[in-house]
Image (cartoon, rainbow, N blue to C red):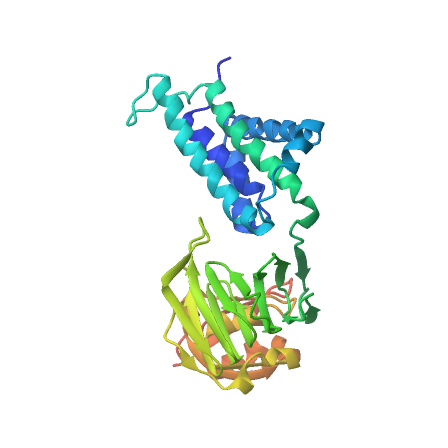
Length: 366
């Protein structure tokens, strides 16, 4: 039976394969890949072809010829490799694909239904992956070591990073941390974290969460990632907060703001940053001492925070998401919050048999 793998599928497979070899794959990217992989047999066939080639090249890299080639490479750094090899691969795929298409009689504006010849395709992929495998094996002794941290519901954990930075992780939060030769990196995958960054001007400190990137040298600041918003509040020092493009991780310079001590900024998913606002430093990251404090905050953000500290999850009706509240309470009191809100706002709540709480608008009083 002839293969139904098209040029488009081959391109998708190559891009997914390169991404999945990266140490910086996010949960959303991994989920998207699995969805693509399970869509059809052709996706699986194309992807597995790259897996086989990568495995064969990995075995070749351990031979005498492979060691000789690696020993001849002495002008690269680990950081340079991780930053640029993936981009090179995509460039090679694009350029050489066109060469083989033209060789096979196709025009630049019309590509055949079946992708360029297997010989041509695998020659290009083989060349690029061949170089990548040898470079990668040459740097295994200095590979990036990614450390992962996770807290359970109502668990607050202090994390001492190797550079001396102290991170306090809120309940139900996830974080990954790693260093390169010249940079320190953290990715907040879920939840909230307070950073006391050790000063080191030679190694800037980056925090990524969603499509937001924070760059600092040494400072104290809080990052809160709820279901639809990222908020950054600074106690001391200066941070640069930028938008980044998920597909390239490139910073969008036109969407960057500087935030100094006593100020905060936020952004909703896919939106621009809000105006920088003043905030009392004493109100930043009070959760570390067991108290949640909010001033004119969206009710949906309050509920997102509360759900990190209770097993009786609170579900909020969408019509109530943007109601603004000013409220303060101890973490030990989170299970009493629905009753407190029903006294402050026109809302009512119910509990189901599992303990989940549902908050809805209450009918107007007669």
